Amino acid sequence: MEQTDRCADLLNSLSLAEAQAHIFASVTPISGIECVPLKQAQGRFLAETISAPISLPPFPNSAMDGYALRHGDIAGQRGSLLTVIGTAFAGKPYEGLLGQCQCVRIFTGAAMPTEADTVIMQEDVICEGDQIRLTRTVSPYANVRPIGDEIHAGECLLERGKMLQAAELGLMASAGIPKATVTRKLRVAFFSTGDELRPVEESLMYGQIYDSNRYLLHSLLNCQSIEAIDMGVVPDDATAVKQALLDASRQADAVISSGGVSVGDLDFVTASLAELGHVGFWKVAVKPGKPFAFGRIGPAWFFGLPGNPVAVMVTFRQLVRPALHRLMGTQPKLPLRLQAVCRTPLKKSPGRMEFQRGQFESDMEGGISVTGFSGQGAHQLLGMSRANCLIVLPKDNAGVKLGERVEIEPLFDDFF
Ligand code: AMP
Ligand code: MG
Image 1 (tube, rainbow, N blue to C red):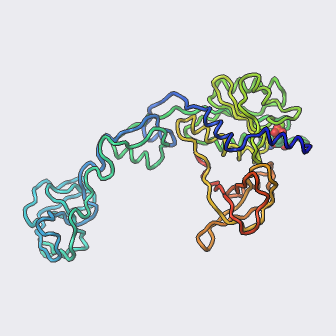
Image 2: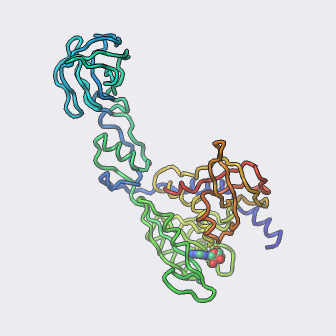
């Protein structure tokens, strides 16, 4: 590309932050909900805010194995003598009343006997026949979980848009909620474009390559809240690309393509999008990943990713996944960024923000260090596989010296 073309190109490009802001401001959550039993709600997004139907815990109970007592009787004093008059097990409360200087043997989770307000741990008493002697002073209300300690009935238990995972599903069960009202699954159709692409099961002719993007997109879309629709490989042909876009937009809320989005002779995606719908923008100043189209075809949102597989992964993380979050009714989540000390020099020219592949680890001082490595090509998935993070280099950065601080994005947060 000529120098002047390159400058014009950069001027016409959006920064990553501008592109993100544009996309997140455009897409709105899908409508449609369904009610599913808890065991089928894993990975789904709550479509309504839930109030606690009961307090948690629902009754005051013991946090320890020990003895339940009335603190006023003994003022918690070491050396006090109490008579044991019964036992309270989890699920089998002690039903009687507690007289002066009496106590009840109690186990973790058992309801506190009426009038008892304090539990002394079994390690802090010695048994003398049917009596116990305190070997330590105990404070009032010690080792008791009061009613509503965690949440009171009527308070907000879980907010709309929350993804239901182990903690949330367990929490709902503990509040006696058997079903969850969740956003319906988001339908995402995806296809690859390119005459050179072959499905992985077939053999290659000279000049052809295997289609890797559909396999990695299938994996990136692996989420219980998404119904991923694989639409195969589309040839570099204007009519075929248009047909694929139309078919996809009729059956999906979001359409993702890879390849053919640049300005080559056989790049039909952006032109087809402009003909069938609306192009939001189509260049983002990031490397890898500059050609990127965003727009709309009928009711479906469209994301035209570049062809190179690493660029697909980078733009998906930055621009597509957060947009899908928004479509599914939750806040767009951008990848986590951390500071790290760079243990290798890194090459970079100013002009575009860059995501380089790196390996980070905790260092001896408790900080994080990162090393870059060779194999940074946008077509080289091997580098992506070796990496456990992306090193984020800002637009104007002109290279990194050994020992300089950089930002990294760990790749282990690659779930929805
Ligand atoms: P394009 O954006 O279509 O010009 O593609 C850019 C580069 O990515 C070319 O080298 C393509 O062969 C390659 N490419 C495009 N799509 C895929 C795919 N699905 N799997 C692997 N490589 C691809
Ligand atoms: Mg192509």
